[in-house]
Image 1: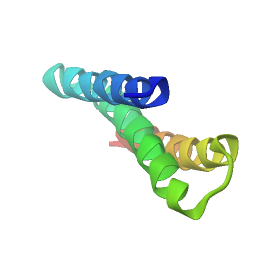
Image 2: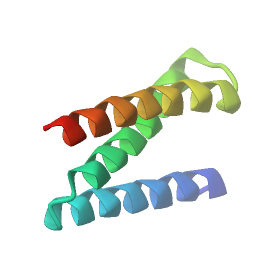
Image 3: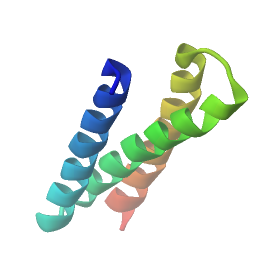
Image 4: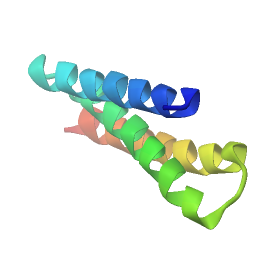
Length: 79
């Protein structure tokens, strides 16, 4: 297993743990944060099939994740 693969697996475990923590403690903002991070990681990996640099894919993936987090936190605060 390469170091990059191990790092991605660690990130997934960390983000999933954050998601479960937010769910268990009923902190919706943390759940939204974890969901955005997982979404960013998923988009980064989906874009790998199209090529492009890791930097470009990360920027797009985590940019979409940040947008998800921003909208989600606003919706949580308004609810």
